[in-house]
Length: 227
Image (cartoon, rainbow, N blue to C red; front, side, top):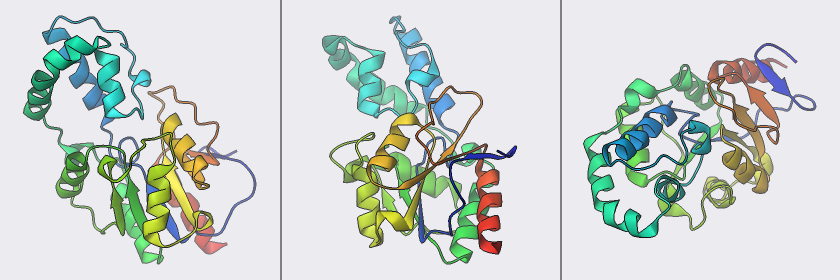
């Protein structure tokens, strides 16, 4: 074990494609969205059943809404208010992009690899991130919640990404951060790398490799290219 990564088994050759989750992997958005949810609860004088951010990590937004307000009648009453509140507090994705993400994407493209984005976030949020961050390369495949029937931990979004890349699962690596995201990638038959964040308590034990950040992923890939 090194200071930059924890791994199981032996090193593997550079893969044909790398499939990225969005929130927590490309952009540091979880804390922003968590605080926004907590603010909405405070302003409406509602009880906070899940005050720990770890409960929300990687969770389907529809499920998060149910977690915030378990009472279905109250949810229906406040649904329009929440949509307006959300629209009035937009995230600045450019300010949230994680260190060395543009460099890693460029490294992969220059190495001849394909890259995909497999998020179960709303299509509008995915498009907003791509527009605001102005990444130096274009994803070969972009998927959002609009493209799949079942969200993570179901494997649908990763299976769809592999299909659209016209590859096999063995040719791809998924890069995730959440427990449900890792489960989804593994269920799709993908080698799965996890990005650890010391601020959160996430079970990443099912990942094939765990990295301390995108910079550590870059270092590992460069070593693969030179071996």
